[in-house]
Image (cartoon, rainbow, N blue to C red; front, side, top):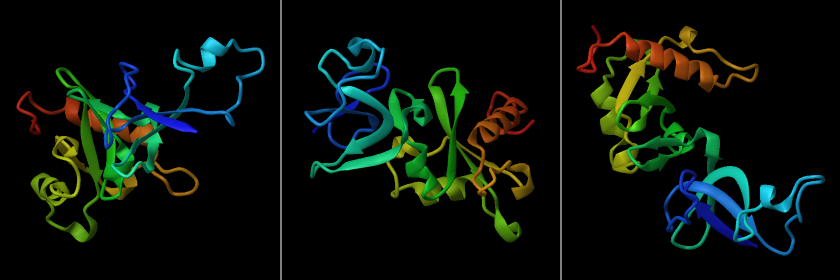
Length: 175
């Protein structure tokens, strides 16, 4: 099997370490889908785009980071929420100049005095600088809709974040 990481916007192969869509090609791969033209399943180089996101590290190992429809595209870079979620829950919020921006939703337990700067500072050095969230929004746990198996519903969280940010002034701080 051959694995290629593809920029979801341009379709261009990515270098080692860069996030993107996972595309595969090889003799053990399916020949296509029943009643679907091959050009609808494979790109011009014969790669099948899996819909998964990830990167290949310097050792050639593939790392899965989520689904491509979950990638946050901010200022020309792809950010996987899965990577940030190891430390915090991240969502993409539309942004006028960046396309999307990374927003972390946090719940401060036991009324801890954690600030936006504290969360951003905690993430510095743990993840790439362009993946540091531009905003950290604090919520009560009861505000976060969950699935039956206690996972946060990201679409509803994204809507909650957008609503919260729309209530802020142009300076980016609460009105």
